[in-house]
Image 1 (cartoon, helix red, strand yellow):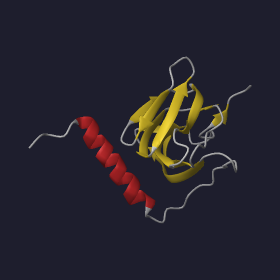
Image 2: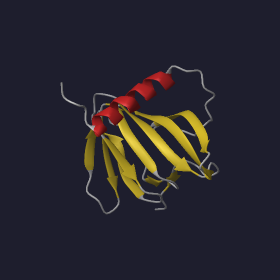
Image 3: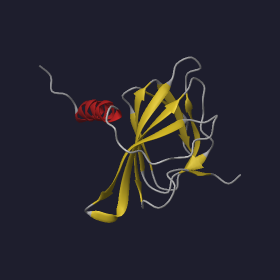
Image 4: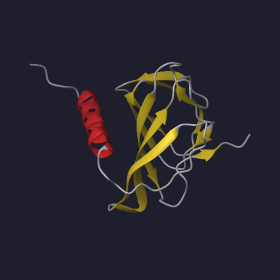
Length: 145
C-alpha cells in the first residue's frame, strides 16, 4: 500500500472539512454578493489566538457555469482549494491557469486578481477559501479602473 502524499492528504482533509462544515447550522455573517457574480457563503470566522490581530474566514465561493468575478484584490492572504469543477485564475503579472477539483493556490495580500471565473460554460464550480484578515476589512475589494 502506497503512502498518500502530503498534498493529497491536505486535499482530502480540506474536502472533508468543507463537506462537514457545509452541513452545520453556523451563523453566517452577511457578505454582499452582486446578483450576476459568484456566491460567497461564509462557513466560519475565528480570531487566531497566536495572532490576536488576525482572523481566519473560511468560505465557499460558488460559480454558475460561465460566471466570473470582477477584478479584485484581497487585503489578507488567500488560500483557495477547488472543491468542484474548474476555475480559471490569474494574478496580475502572472499567466492565467485553470485549477481543477483537488488543486489549490495561494494569493498574497493586495495581489490584483484580474481573472477569476468558472472555466466551464456548462458545469458549476466551487472553491473553499481560507482568508486571513484583520477581521475589520472586507474580504474582497474591487480594483480601481
